[in-house]
Amino acid sequence: MQRTLCKASFANMSEDRIRLDPRSLRGIAHPLRVRMLGLLREHGPATATGLAERLGQSTGATSYHLRQLALYGFVVEDPERGVGRERWWRAAHRLTTLDSETIARAPAEAEAYVRAVAASYADQVERWLGEGATTDPAWIATSTLSNWRFRLTPEEAAQLHAEVFALAERYRRDGSDVAAPPGAEPVVLQVQLMPFVRRADESGARAPGADGGDAPFDAGATGGGD
Image (cartoon, rainbow, N blue to C red; front, side, top):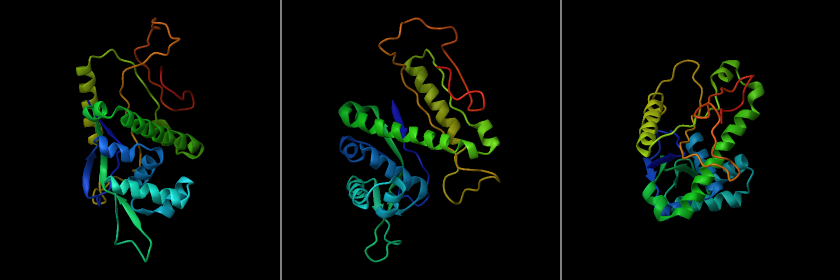
């Protein structure tokens, strides 16, 4: 199993991806660091002050966490932008990958990291919902919060994972030199694939149609068919 998380695209990043190991997990398994790294990947280089303003944090806090991210190889200084004592930072990679071997070797750190990533994904949805009143109707019609329940073997789940990611790759336009068609806007596709865990108070009975459901975000629905 391989999980690719915190995805973004900037052509000036020095490497394509960082593969987490137990040591580097210790450096990123923090909610604020995940959010800061995501902002650097999404918006490009920034200072501790700029990140503090975006995140509602103190400059001291963002400065400390930037140094920790640098220590573990997630960010690097951008000396071409610095003026005087001002320090600019940029993400060192476009992608962060967490695989099953690392999860097994450092389960507590892996869980903390994945929880931080999940929180950042939930924040993306909350921000989108907060802007819903001003969203172009064309985008409302194409946006969706959907889920399906399947009965799959691990091999089938791996195949589904691969097919979804292959489809997403067809639409990626990374780098400033890649032209996008007129009307293109930044969008985010979130993918979560995991075993379904029942709550303690749920019975084993399955309602008709419980294996799937889809509800686009429109005037009549705000969630999936779970």
